[in-house]
Amino acid sequence: MTRFIDLPSMSRLVRSIGAARFLGELADSLHEDFLRWPEFDKSARVASHSERGVIELMPVADARRYAFKYVNGHPSNTARQLCTVMAFGTLAEVDTGYPLLLSELTLATALRTAATSLMAARALARPDCRRMALIGNGAQAEFQALAFHAHLGIEEIALFDTDPAATDKLVRNLADWPGLRLRRAASAAEAARGCDILTTITADKIRAAIVTPAMIEPGMHVNAVGGDCPGKTELHPEVLLAHRVFVEYEPQTRVEGDIQQVPANFPVTELWRVLRDELPGRESPEQVTVFDSVGFALEDFTTLRYVLEQAQRHDIGSDIELVPPGEQPKDLFRYARGARADGAARRAA
Image 1 (cartoon, rainbow, N blue to C red):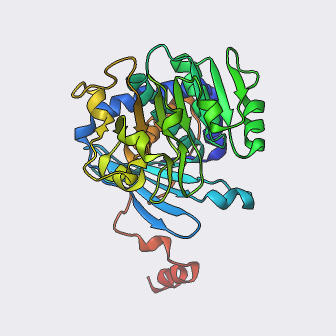
Image 2: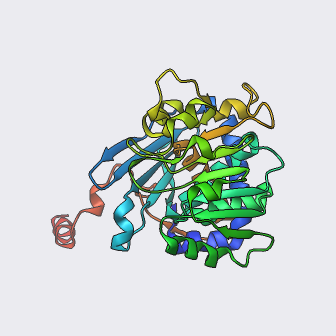
C-alpha cells in the first residue's frame, strides 16, 4: 500500500508536531541529506514556461529511494483565488519502483523552503543575529519568520510588501507569537536598515532590483528566495558581484537564480561544500554573505522522507492501492475486464 497525505492530513501532521518543531527537525534532516550530496543522482528541474507562469518537475534519487515533485509558479493566481505555488510529490523505492508515499507538497514546500533558508543561515549568518527584514509578506513569509525566530534567535522582524493586505495578514498570524516583535516599514530600504538578515520572498515574474547596493550593511546575510526562474530576479547585480554568493545546485541556479544576471564565470559556492567543511562559509563578522536560493529537488526528497517517517509515527494519512497489489502481477487485464465478459468466460468454461 502507498501512504497518501492530502492537505488536511498534512495540516494535522504539522499541528501534531508543532510548526516550529517541524521546521527545526526538517532543517536538521536537510543538513543530514546535504552531507550526503555526492550520493545523489542530481539534475536541474524540467520546466515548462508560459506567459503566466511555469510548471516544473523536480527529480532526484539516491541508491535506495527516488523522489519527484510537480510544482507550479503563477504569480497572477491570487487574483483568481488560487495559490501562486501548488505542488505534490512521490517517494518510491529504487529497487522495485514501488511508490511509498503520495503527498501534497504545497504546505510542505513552504515549510521546506523556510527550513532550507534556516539551514543556510546557520552556516552563513553571524551567530549574534537578532533583527531580520522580510521583503515580501505573502504565503511563504510566516514560515520564514517562525523558522528564524524559533531556531536562530531573531527577535525583531521589519516587514514590507507592496500589498499592505499581505503585511496585515502576516501580523494577524504572528502577532501573538511569544518573544517576536513585528515592525511595519514604509519601503524595502527602511525594512533593511539595521537588519542582520535580509530575506526577499517576492513573487512577481520580472527582473527586479529590490535589494540595491545602498541597502547592504557590513556583516549582513542576504537570504534571496524569490528569484527562482529565468527572467525573475530580486537583487541588483552589483550586490552579487561585490559579495560571496552561495547556491544549492549551481547548474540550476545559473539559469534560474539571481546569478543569471552576472557573467557565467562569476564564482559561487555550493552550500553542501560548506556544510561538509570542504570550503569556508562566512570568513569574518564584517563579511556579507548571499544565499541565492531557487529550491532544489534534494530538499523535496528530504521533505518526503521526513513526512513519511512522521506520518507513520503519528498514524496520519491513509493507505491506498495506487498500484496493483502483489498477487497475480502478470494479470493486469483483470482490472479492465467487465462483468459481461466475466460471465461469458464462465459460461464458456
